[in-house]
Length: 138
Image (cartoon, rainbow, N blue to C red; front, side, top):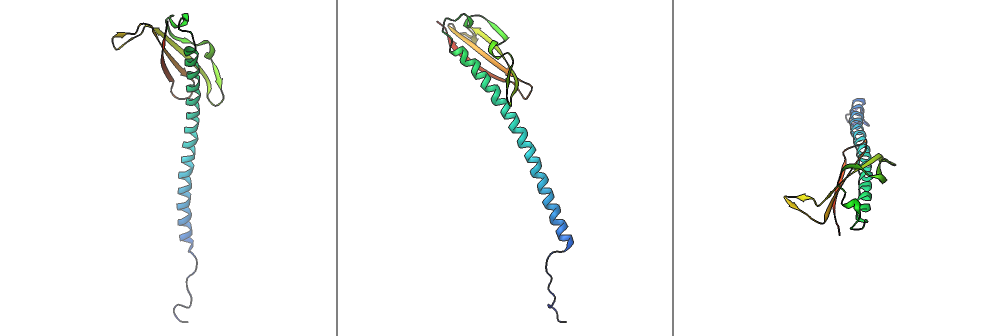
């Protein structure tokens, strides 16, 4: 027989095993990224729920009349009645704590006629969300 009559065709068993090993390592990396993505999605859903609850409590304060007595009553880390323990789908059980500071001192200056409202929302997942707003009184 002459050289070149039998040409090699296909892959050897070693080449196939090496290719499969490289492919498996790539799939494992993708699986790890998928787990990280799912955890990030869960955390962001929890944060979104806490932000929505904090926004709701802030909106309740902003909707109050300027002479509402709740704007002049000093409160520190008190549970807000409408958000004591709210169960939010995907966000768990959230609670809102409110601090009300009438005529707050900020940077050494007293702001007469304003009320500082700070809302802190917490649940079992991740860090707390805090929102602050000022409301003018009359």
